[in-house]
Amino acid sequence: DRFRESKVYMRALFDYIPLEDKATPCQEAGLPFTRGDILQVVTQDDPTWWQAKRVGDSNLRAGLIPSKQFQESLMNSSSRLSYTLSFRLSRKDRQGSAGEGSDPGDPDFMTYEEVTRYQQRPNERPRLVVLIGSLGARINELKQRVIAENPHRYAVAVPHTTRPKKPHEKDGVEYHFVTKQQFDVDTLNNKFIEHGEYKENQYGTSIEAIRSVQAKNKMCIVDVQPEALKRLRTAEFKPYVIFVKPRVPEGRRRRSAATSPGGGDHGRLTDEDIQEMRQSAIQIDQQYGHLVDRILIKEDSVSACAELRGILERLEKESFWVPVSWVR
Ligand code: 5GP
Image (cartoon, rainbow, N blue to C red; front, side, top):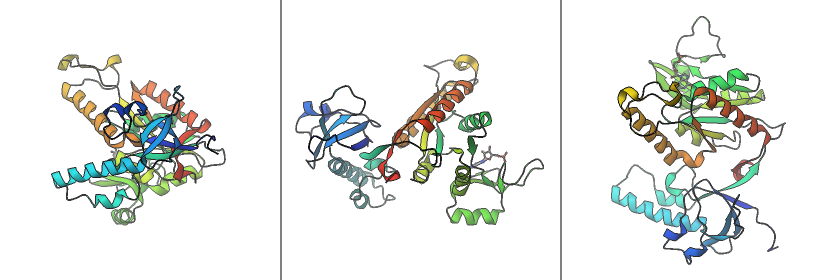
């Protein structure tokens, strides 16, 4: 039994540098990894130090990594410290949530998430594809393009809105047109994965709208604010999350010269624009990077669309790592 290959795989939700770890019994025996790496846990015999290999690594020797429990206790004590120091009174009792295992939505308790290979079978509902984007990514346009190319396979979830229907529009096609009262009731009932206001009208995308696309056996593509990810990460939807980052021009340029390479998508960008785009990408990466399956660097609309198409095609044919809770 001891010699059987371990079937326990963990996605690392933090970076680990053994040479900087003062707690390890042996720095040289440590296995360095970065957030997002898939680790095959060879033994969990010791409650504090596991032995693991990195999947896809040519190095066959296992190394030491902190156990989930140990890492959680470290993160818990350091976050309690920062809690005390900064009087972050709005946060709920952190101590309480630590015992229940790390919540992949809470950046303070990101340790490992147990994962397994999953391949969508032909009779199963297609996985939900979620696009999130940093400033300048224009994910809605990207989504529309990919769907327009292949409307039999891909579709949007039809949003709800309180704005009046235009003559050429059909209820249930562009939008589900509802009254403000209905919209409020739906919001209270948690029907929407996200909603927002635009020119004094409400807009929102419902869970049902996603389900009805999937019921037609089409792949549903949504573009959402990253906050919606937590809501969507369920066994039902098995979301595949793509983070679209616009290619940010290198270095500092003078205002007049700051056009994007290829002259296409961004038009003229000032230094501040560029700075804001960088900052936005960094922020999303820090807060939500561990929930991202794939990063798409958007050069221009045409190549980004082609790349997205390729990703979607592979999604139906190949297997991917997903949380074990989605398939058990
Ligand atoms: P329109 O009324 O011209 O069809 O849409 C105007 C704007 O409403 C869009 O540009 C977009 O900003 C917003 N919008 C449309 N659908 C949604 C949605 O599902 N959720 C949110 N939050 N905003 C939407």
